[in-house]
Amino acid sequence: MINSLNDLTAYEWIEESTVSVDLENWNGGRVCNLIPNGYTHYCKIMNSTFYRDRGITNETLLWSQFHPLEHDIKIDLGEGITLKELALKYNIPYDKKISSKAIERKLGGCPRYLIYPDEGRINLDMLKEITKVLAPFTKDQSCYFYYDILKLIDRLPIDTIQNPHLYTGKLNDIFTVYNKGEMDGLASPTYWWPEDRSWCMSTDYDLDFTIFGGSKQLLDALMSNDKLECIEVDLETRVDE
Image (cartoon, rainbow, N blue to C red; front, side):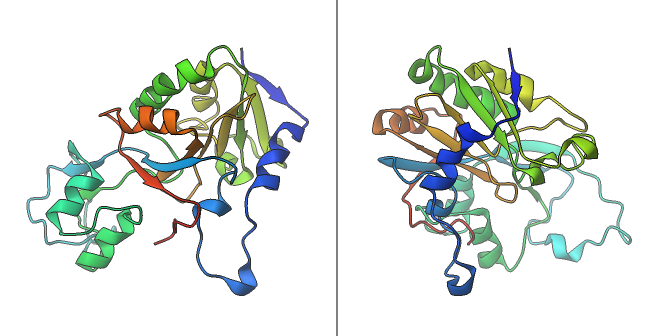
């Protein structure tokens, strides 16, 4: 059963274990700014695949060429396409720095035929695969699910979101809290982790991937799941380019 906690003490270790952003000496957002720095291994997990819009046959068109007031934009979701497949297609290095933005830089904008992964929200099918991998490592521990205020706006009544929200339950209770609230639910927590802190997931509200920190054994388990697109990173890997 999921429970809401008024006390955010259980979350404080995350703030203490991440590197604060230095806005006066800005040199880019990095993995170390978003997730606890004490793990041995890190990776980013795409929140979903990209999807082809079957209604667009001209792959050279960019989204910037379509204006909502001038075009009746309809989307017909087709097959999923991984970032790795797109990197190969457009001759972009597929390494720890690869991101959706690399496609935009290469092509001069976002291709109209591509529907990008959601920012700040893990696709439900991907979430099921992630929890399936995490389950043997987490066992029957309690888990915590933390939502920053920016994740709550328009999803809960405004008078209930003066502060971040923290929930606790078992691992599979992620699905209960995911569907809580209005619209399409609260969806992915900003952070979620087990009581022993042996792993942590971070889904920032404006990124289309989730960052994982944990052991090599758990990293290998995530990387070997063929339904997830996981890319190993390190603490200094940029997340904003």
